[in-house]
Image 1 (cartoon, helix red, strand yellow):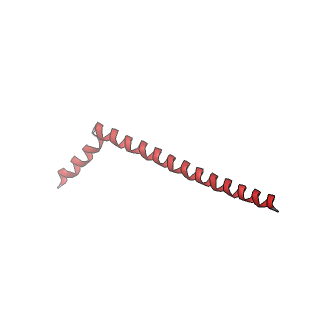
Image 2 (image 1 turned 30 degrees about the horizontal axis):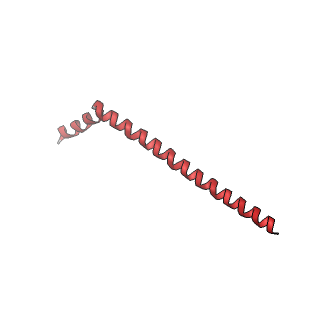
Image 3 (image 1 turned 30 degrees about the vertical axis):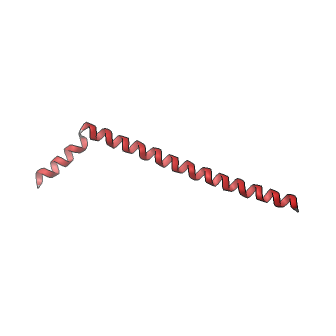
Length: 61
């Protein structure tokens, strides 16, 4: 009886550990993709691609 209780606790803690690792992996993936998108936007801004659109809208006013 004691052995099976210990086995159940080990399995549940392992499942909890896997869930935490999975959540951390998802968060890291989202942060990396968000960082790449932001760096892409900054590069476009440096090239002037985003500024041209703003100037067009200002000319209509």
